[in-house]
Image 1 (spheres, rainbow, N blue to C red):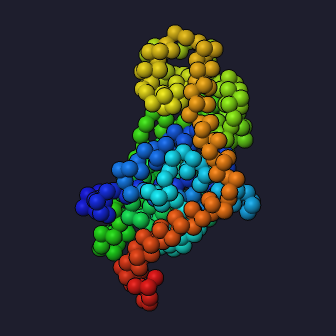
Image 2: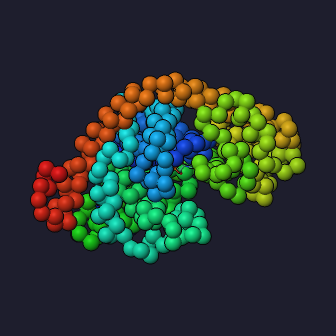
Image 3: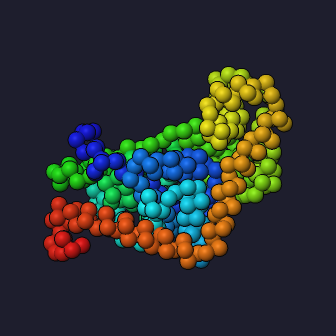
Amino acid sequence: MGNSTEQAPAGKGRIFSGIQPTGNLHLGNYLGAIRNWVSLQNDFESIYCVVDLHAITVHQDPLQLQKSTREVAACLIAAGISTDQSILFNQSCVPQHAELAWIFNCVTRLGWLNRMTQFKEKAGKNRENASVGLYAYPTLMAADILCYRATHVPVGEDQKQHLELTRDIAQAFNSIYGRDVFPLPNPQIFGTATRVMSLRDGAAKMSKSDVSDNSRINMTDDADLILQKIRKAKTDSDALPSEVVALSSRPEAANLVGIYAALADCSTENVLAEFGGRGFGEFKPMLADLAVARLSPIGDEMRRLLKNPGDIDAVLAKGADRATAIARPLLAQVHDVIGFLGKSTDH
Ligand code: TYM
């Protein structure tokens, strides 16, 4: 891949990232994405999007979708996203995303999409019945990022393949049309919890759609529920080891230690230095206290913000205007490059 197109648009690099409003925002979303979004705001021009177009790749009840969209926005604000500093909006309010996704559908090869593991997981055995939208999901994701010529994309580990595809699509477009329109964005996957696993199964990722609510800690869970879920979390019966290597064959223990390290902002080694040799009976209550200390202020603030849904809608509308001001001229340029006739300067 060439590097000539990788520089930031101007000054600071530009971040884009998104999150689906499909209910049950959880600790994995927070540790794998949201808290990094908050800390990156100062160093980058940041654009954060509630991806409602992505949500409908699987049917969503309309009222529930509105509620979840406001909840995600409230959670991001409660976690520390500044809506003055960063742009926060919902995807369907900026039609350039869907338009660029269509253009990318015409550049993306079927073979590339066939390799996407998330589609295989989400479509399951009944692939014939999955929506075309679910299949084309990654081209919309590429459009989200490239609409803003974003250079950096903070995500959890599970989105890595989609990010690689985004780079391939950007490169394919640039090469087909012989113009460096799109930079090749860099995935930013960092921290100790890039893949938080289910509390019930150390081999499955913590997910909004898991049927068992005990598998995840939701951002809105109260202290009692967090304690109860951590107490019930699957573990083995051995004490915690003192060495990190010994966690490799103990996925559930590794997950809880990883969560502790991420919440305490320290390394796995530090956690084991403190808890090595101690049993889960001692470790779990300490983990629960830490999780409550970190999450409950966010949950409380989220609930407060959600009492005024009109204010959240106004924030999202303002964000959509700011996002459109960036995406519209980019689409005008794309029209020119492709050879679309018409109001390219007044797109
Ligand atoms: P979504 O809504 O599934 O998740 C939002 C973010 O949370 C991260 N995440 C996790 N991190 C660690 N452990 C977990 N168990 C875990 N579960 C989720 C995800 O990696 C993600 O960063 N396709 C995206 C949304 C999207 C997007 C984009 C992201 C749409 N357009 C453009 C970046 C750029 C998704 O479904 O995220």
